[in-house]
Length: 200
Image 1: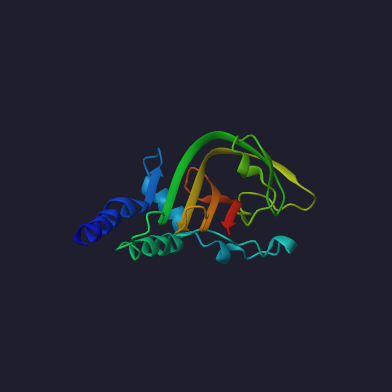
Image 2: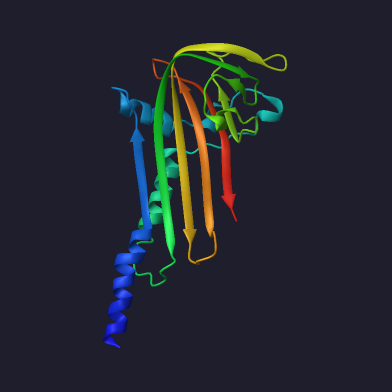
């Protein structure tokens, strides 16, 4: 009997504990890395949607530092004794950047329609969150507009979350990606949240 309880403790601490974690990675090749992180994580999309975009005005989903801290705390509070070897509770958060001397985009007031940026999700027209800084990008008065932005930084934020306790169940999960384009003064030119997947 003692051996059985020892097995449960070993299983909990060695096997299951390894399946409960969060990972935060900043892959930013810029001398002002912390400023970029602060710009990205403290941006308030809802507060900046102060113009009437018609059907787009409700698209205000954005993952902020507040959300990041909530997910981290969710994982931390779950670290304890779990005896189910199929238990998973994970959260992965990454930010990476690319610099461009010129970025051409075709856009309307709802989303990015075309671009010379190779990331496929960036072009998804069904954005869950979208913001244009109209002091840098003109408002669209027809179907679309084309603009070339010079010396910009594209910031990609990716989030993966999974919480499951069964072998053949996907459990509860969430994946989403958001992009920001910053100028060389680290001002936000645009935000696009083109991809969100939740399950079940």
